[in-house]
Length: 148
Image (cartoon, rainbow, N blue to C red; front, side):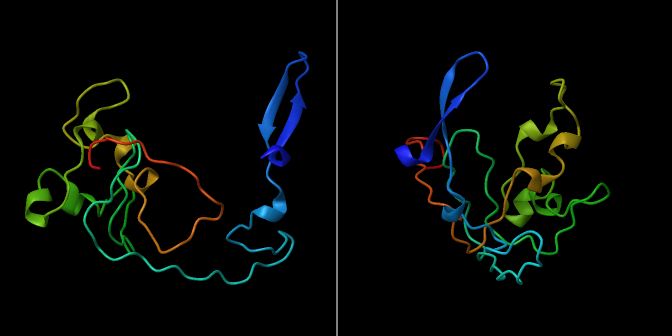
């Protein structure tokens, strides 16, 4: 681990130990191609099949999307997610209803419709594909959270 740490001195004389990553240890989705060259065609990832809700790993984690959203339109005029997850439709569609928190504006006022800041679902909710992590992940989920 020590080879991943670098001593950094700030002007005030404070010394911090900050993690560093050797560029050879991480390869982006672009591969090892330099930015000045065209990247090779990325390997297409397969959306995971529809399945029950995915367990959350930490408190306040936005739920992951347990199905493909390929072809879904989410723009200022339309939101395909609401056709199943809105309070009006979730029972008929067998979907999870959107949280009450999505109906509160930034000033804490309750709204009749989904708040503009919560309307674009994929800002927080991510669908899953069959991709492996780019770097080793040693994260351990919190035990005993709701939904585990």
